[in-house]
Length: 328
Image (cartoon, rainbow, N blue to C red):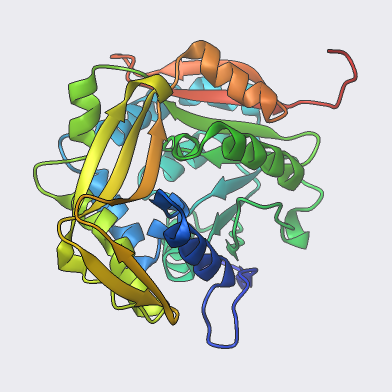
């Protein structure tokens, strides 16, 4: 197997708990509108549930993005060129990442992910599919600048951020992430990023509240993770999953709704919620051409090319690292 020793950059306390996870949960539960960042969905169970979500009938983004990757490989190869170190922000999908790697003749593959177990499994699977490709997994919080392995430090980089994960973030946080990616990847980098498109409300809502209940299980697993890792006693059965379309922000919101008055503790701190009160767990912003370009430009990336699937549900955008400038 061609997978190299993985690098661990997650900040753990003496009990083995991710300090950032604890801080985000406690801060979020103390807020007037309780909220926990969506990145904490992805423990091993959450990562597997998300893979399951991509296969349900209502969840179109993965199928649409895969269609683009299958049909536009020649264009990717021409614009990206061979030999780049592909740095994927989030462990690679068993479908999407191989399609990209097959098209562009990469020099190496560097998956970054905060979930170590899922990262190592994905890296091993990818290495088996591409036995001649050096793979350097890095367990890290990629929302911050990451020091990449020395083996790829001098190679030109291609960042890969599929799945419209950028849409999970409010504009300020998304811009910060794009700028941190720019710092991680360097001046000569390219970025291939997925962005979901604005469309019919019914289609959007069903994609985040599927009939099989997989998305609901994904959302509820966050409470289970908090109980397990942060010594919590949240009554999970007292909550339900809800997906909402919020037109002014062009986004789907996911919430965990308390169905009754509840009290619980997390990391020794006490909390209470009234029936109907929610924990806001995810945003999924949708874009049009202008808003997508504006987001990338604010993050110091210059759009180069945009592709959509045949039904124009989803987009992949190739952008180039922008150089600092003083002009307005």
